[in-house]
Amino acid sequence: MPLNPEILETLENTQVHYIRISDDYSTNINQWNIGRASMITWALGVIPFKDTFWTTSIQPESRYGNFTEPNVLLNGLVALMSLGGVAISDKIGNTNSTVVNRLCRTDGILFRPERPATAMDSTFLGDNGPKGEMWHTYASDVRKMFFVEYVMITNLTQSYAFTWNE
Image (cartoon, rainbow, N blue to C red; front, top):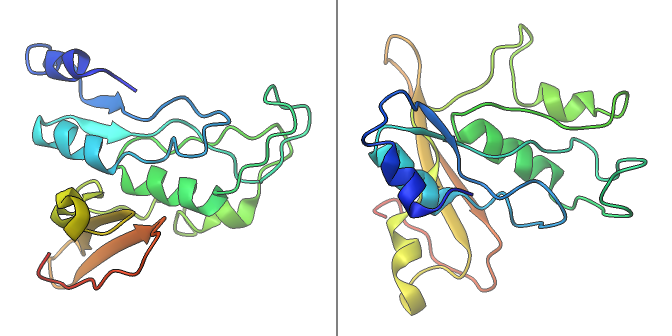
């Protein structure tokens, strides 16, 4: 994950269009959590993306040993909703095509929102906000006739009454 000075450097270095904002994909099962950092990079005009991910829970002969990925679908969704590159890092022959196919149309075009999913305002309310992650983004068709909002809620440790006014 880049540090704040590296992110702010993009203001002067206008050749930067994408920035990886997640930690390295490894045994850190929360490296997908990029909702807050995505707000910053998107506000600066730089597209955020997360590191690669596995499409199966276990990778034979992995350099991470017996690590089991508990968040296969979540990692895929976050990669897709980040607007950056969607890159899988499975061992050759170990890719779960069902997971990959959920991210794109039959012609291979990725399902994409119009802006990266970012943390919702309520997640910054401390004790009054949700105890977990709530992200929001949206998409529309080319002619802007249909509009869809997406809300991703994960890792809640207690119930939270979500409203569309957030």
